[in-house]
Image 1 (cartoon, rainbow, N blue to C red):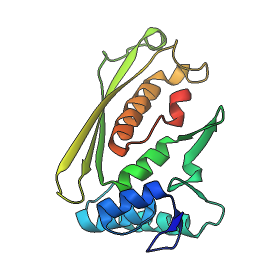
Image 2: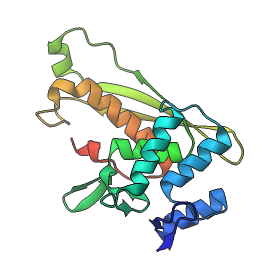
Image 3: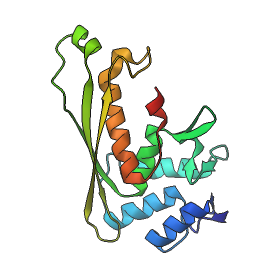
Length: 186
C-alpha cells in the first residue's frame, strides 16, 4: 500500500497505477475527483462546495476505510463477495469525469397497475464522461430490464425504477470499469 500525495490516505496498487497514468501523481479516488473537476471545470449535478465538503468528510472519517480506493460506505457484502453500490458507482464516475446521466424508457408506457405487474420493462441509459487528457466526451450506453419474475417480492411494485437503476448501473460500470453493483441483487 502507498499513500495519496494530497491527503495521505492509503491507496491500493491498482489505484496508484491508474492515478499515475491519468494524473501523473499518486492520488486516492476523492483527490482524483477533485483534480478532474479542476482540469475539466465541469459543473456536475453536485455543486462544487457540497462535493468538496463530502470529500473532506470522507477524508477525515476514521471509520470510513477504503476498499480499492472506494470508501467502504459504498461497498455491500453479498454472499461473502464485495459489490459497489449505485452511490459508489456515481462517486467513482465523478472521479473519472462524469458529465451526465440520461435514461429513457424503451418499452411502451405503462397505463395501469395491472400492466405494470405483467410488463417487461426496458430502459436505456447513456453516461457521458469527459476524458481529462483530451477533453473529449466519451459516451457509454447500456440497457436494463425488470419484470415480476426477475425482481424480489419487495421490489415488484417498483419494477419501473429497478429497470432504470439497472440500466444506469450497467452504463456506470462500463464508464468506471467496475464489476457488478449491489443493486443487481435487489
